[in-house]
Image (cartoon, rainbow, N blue to C red; front, side):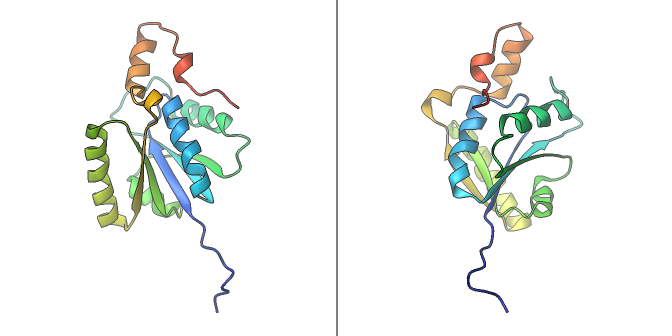
Amino acid sequence: MANNSEHTARVGLFVGSFDPFTIGHDSIVRRALPLFDKIVIGVGVNERKKYIQNTDQRVSTIQQLYADVPKIEVKAYTDLTVDFAHREHTTYFIKGVRTIKDFEYEREQADINRLLGGMETLLLVAEPQFASISSSLVRELIHFGRDVSEFLPQKR
């Protein structure tokens, strides 16, 4: 018999390639944190994609950033995101949107994730100061030898 005081954990899943993990990503995680009992940051691995950091580096960088936040776990995955979500017992996807293009893409993803896995998606609109920051922009700046430290989160 279930106890009425039992609480079903609200676990959010924030996924991406995070190559690199930017201040925009950090903003979404920190804004979502009060809404969940736990957040799993899933670092996606796509064998067809070329990364500037290997998987271990990306996971380690994010783990170090949140080392003092017990509600956050960081894990790599190689399968379908919805399968990873079920394995991690997450209840919601957390997604950030910067533009209408992002919104349309994430809406399509939310629809398919609901269809395939019964998962809901929480969309958080990027804060204005982060709306133009993307991992691809940061990778481009790195490629041309520019300092990108202002776009990368620092441990608090």
